[in-house]
Image (cartoon, rainbow, N blue to C red; front, side, top):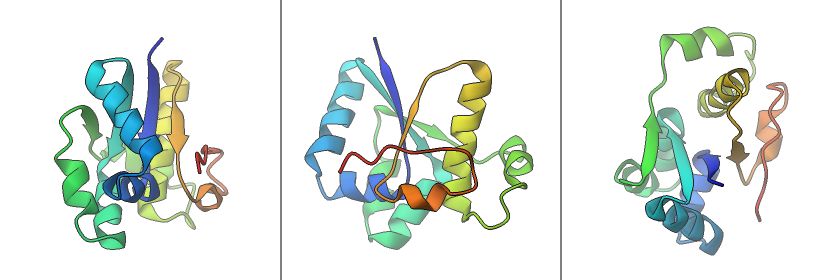
Length: 124
């Protein structure tokens, strides 16, 4: 069974720092035994958090890069106090839930998702 993981900006920064968990997850994606999803706004936020992290994330060829769309914007308008990279990650999860697709949001700061209805897993 393949597992789908959505990495937020905190997870992308950890992957850039060669965190063993996130590195292993990416290796599984490269083998086709897992799937890694990267929200484009999380990529930008990772770069702002740690120089080079966003560029690294953008270069990952075994990851699915998801752009921020108008549909995402509409669906996040109910979260006015949620920062944009968190809103993008959360709305990807909501769209998957609506489609019946299981996935896990990974974040080192799950508290940032308060009010979105999404509870990320902190693998730390």
